[in-house]
Image (cartoon, rainbow, N blue to C red; front, side, top):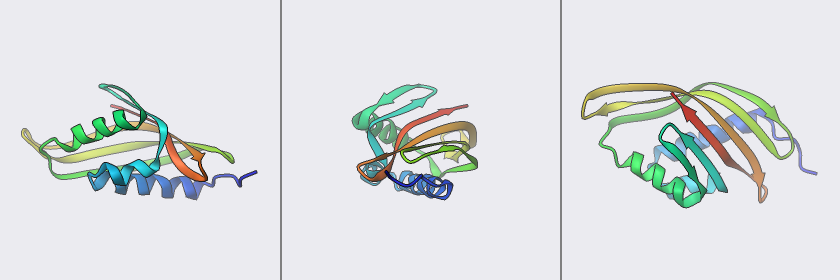
Length: 127
């Protein structure tokens, strides 16, 4: 039986995921995603790696200068040997066609152990 996933591992995983998104390269994000990943955003659900790729790449294609995405108020709600759940506030800021913006919302991530590594299975973001 695998050791329990620790709270620190969850926090480090979320930081790695945050950094990977910042590269704006799906090949950096893909290793952190479960093959059956589900992203639930205000504009819809994106299931599986190819749907996730489309969602990320369409966001990255937006004309945003000084873009920054980061998490605050991370709370690890549950950990066991195969999964973890965390909630957080997300922040997305930058400058676009209509000037500077700063969007704040809430999120939940479900992280699972898959093939011996932590992978994001579900991320739900809402504003």
